[in-house]
Length: 221
Image (cartoon, rainbow, N blue to C red; front, side, top):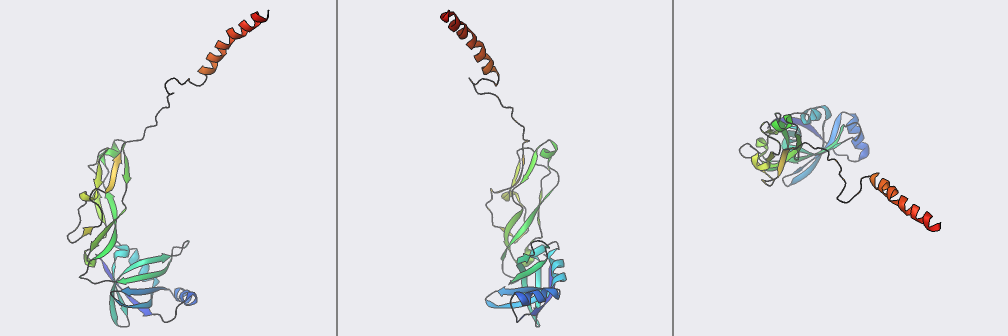
């Protein structure tokens, strides 16, 4: 797994006003917590943080935060973004230990074109991320699944995934990752048994009413 370094500045002031000033200076307000130590309020360079989060490992990038000469090994969690602009507003960094397993969500990438899709089937992906536990350095950037051999009706399950050594999956083995479903064919609507087709009942009723009308007329005569 890739790693990176960020130089963080301590923050003594808190509140919306202070956070706004920090952002205008090109920084992102953040906190650092975990491993039973005190929570630190810091700010990190926005441009460098965005560059890290846009990398292959994304939020699973192992980051060394340098705060007042002390290094904190951490992962970015609880990333708050502006709902319209998409800019990062605040980040929680959780401290980790290199020799201790942690939980992480890893994206699933399907590679290849399934044979079943070539024959008209529909590819359906059920899991887009996989929850794993591993030491920080063992967390993979992605989990790739080759679906080339899947025919119509075939599926890939969690038990079929090939994961690196030291990585444990937090899913049931039978949980489905992706499948190739049969093509959906529109079924023609057919009338139920004994149900008249539209128009036929009306015609038959009209034809059957005519003799009764004639009988009524002759009776009156």
